[in-house]
Image 1: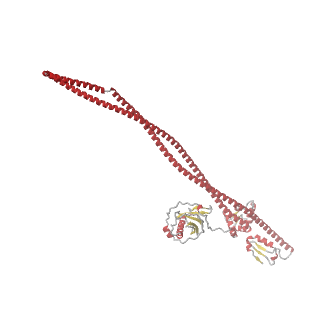
Image 2: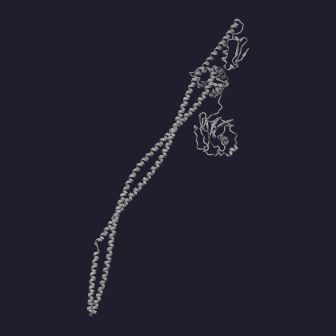
Image 3: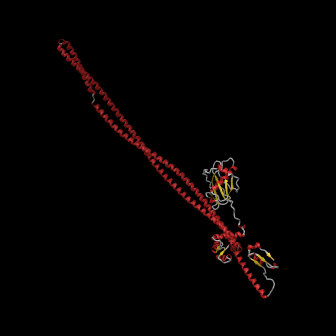
Length: 597
């Protein structure tokens, strides 16, 4: 049976025991969690939205922290996991203590599968380990070493020794390694010679160079304090190894944080450099923009001046054109007058021709009509008068036409046309200059607009870089704080370890005295036993030689293997020291000591 403790927030913190026949896969565990939690959610929160599995974390007892559950190899029997639901307006995981585990209610797998959609999208909610309560793990703890039976102690220590040597017996090398590893072979406890002597003279009873389980059991019976020291120190050695692994993990995390902090520092510095570069570019653009704006204002002033000049030249052109128009009007008027005068001349000439014709006709008629001389002469006189008057009018008209013809008028028109052409050329030059200034001004305005757009883009990019820089600085500050907290935790752990090592050293120093005392007492007991054997042998020889009868001063016998002490009748007169010597020689058999008469 494999048990997983699954905690979840169903309005309140709950912790359920999920049982499996074997170690489940992640899919099987997920289905079991969905089945169980859906039923419990329906029972505990009726009418609420259905349970939605988001992800799970398992508490790593070695690292003493929560880690994401991604593989079944992270699961151990009675391990504690925490199930996060998908965050929604109806549910949010809140920190709190995990209660003791309980059996889940009866569930219906089919009903759950009818409503469960395995494609439920994941939530972006990412709770940190600090947001969850420190777990109350419910593993099956080992018994207190004080309550371990003697045979279990022997077996545990022997298994530790054989595991170190990778064998089913203990060699002298493993023996030395064990005593050295558990700090029994040191200047403050046992010398190397004493350790070797314990192996060859006490543990290896048959002298084959190795210690079997039976021999180690006999050794443990002779030196129970050494056995306890090996047991406790082996357990503490395992704890030290776990602490060492945790410390190495913390150091690794600290190194990772330092690397992340270094990377964040480089990134922040790079962002600062980029921001400074962009600011330099912006300052350069602003300087160029200011210069262009000055040039644009100068061009605007030049444009106004050119426009004023062009207007002035246009005024001159208009004046020249007005003068030309006036001259042309005068020419037209003069032409009209000339035409009128010419028409009058033509009329007078016509009249003159008619008068000549009339005179010729009158002259002819004079010859023909002499008799009408007087009348004709009078008529002729009249005609002469008329001719004279007409000639006089003709002369006047011709003179008037000549008077109307002004020889300077054509020159004035020509000069006006020249002035107009010159003014138009100058106006064209001014207009071209004004157009050039206008074109340059427009180019400057376009350049200024492009530069302003570039500045705006750089300012937007700078704001983004500043935001990115602030994010990098915040990340750096968080990493620095995490590193400080982690280093503080490491320092605290080191202080705790130092204090623990100090307490361990103090305890082991006291224990070393007890171990040495036990070995000395054992040596003293063996010396006393040897002396007793010599005394018994000498007394026996003396009794035989002297022929004395009676009882032996030490008539009792004892079986060290069985722990049974035999006394004959009347043995109550023997001293207690004899019993004490046997009692301390068999410490493992004290409870089985029996008396036989």
